[in-house]
Image 1: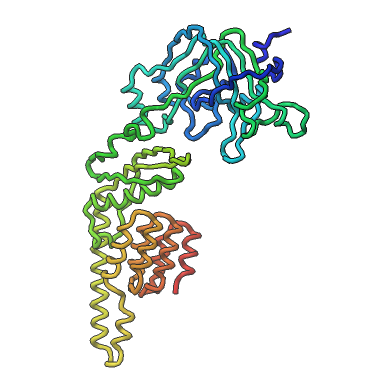
Image 2 (image 1 turned 90 degrees about the vertical axis):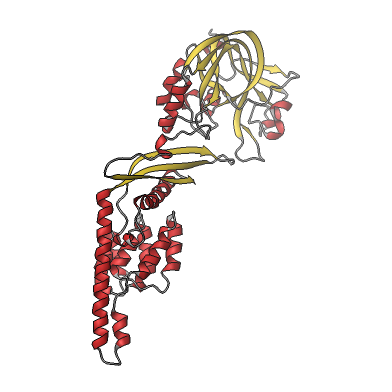
Length: 443
């Protein structure tokens, strides 16, 4: 008959033992019982673990690029005996038959714990022999590090058991059930043995914080503080977050990069009559951080550039728009001077506006970083404005998302003084569905 060391994950491998006077201590927050006991877990050492997850075993570890900087060495355990309480993942707990310990007062507090009485024969300990190379790896590739990794394995012989009481079984049969908050390990009347390991095996692992993440040091590349220079291009950096999602942080960073590029290129509000220069994002740096409430927040940096040719095109368009506005104003003035005495008001109403209103509106919109704030600024600035279709199209170019452009057009529709040119506004949209919605807003 096989002994319990060959049946590590069979519930009831040994009998229930009488209660002892000392309960295990509170479970260590960074020590977990392994999913499988064996004699060589080295392939898991140095693997990074996902942030904000507590239900962990070594199979959750991710062998990322920066894991290559973590090596290991063996340290003799000296045969010291311990009795400790370890955390147990759902997978390991299911194999061992260890029930969940739940707290009725704290909804998110539901975990498995186990008492481990063991003789420590050795430890496999992770080492970072070149800390600078590790730091550089996490700094240059922040997505290849997390805030913690598997840094140590414990080796030894011993026994795994869990607390059980007759009162925890709803049927009253006396079988072990889920241990409630009122019947915790410290007040348990007996222990049930889940596994025995009589030969030295690696049975638990420890989490090690990664010192180069979670704002311990800057993990983004140097371009965050010093944008590069290149012939024919202008670079700028935009920032976004903290945000609930990575995409939201990226969108915010791209929006702020657009404003930073305008300032870096020296484009004035008059020049922006020709629209914003096209923006291209060359690199990203996204950093997850854990808030006090346990939620993961994201911050993002965007390295963006525009070309000198694109800036020149914007300036040329703005100059053409000013010349067109001047010609229209001259035509309107001539028409007004030759019209009957009772017609000046009508002539003035049909003349398109100059650039004064559009400059004011675009200045208000361009002063905001986020789309929601841009729309609020537009709603206020557009009150009483008189704009041509081409000027409205230039304002729509200040919004990146189609939904924001449509919302902006809805606010601006009544300000258009030349609705016959509505096709210019429709051309500001890319997708056919958006174009149809824009056409439907025409006065």
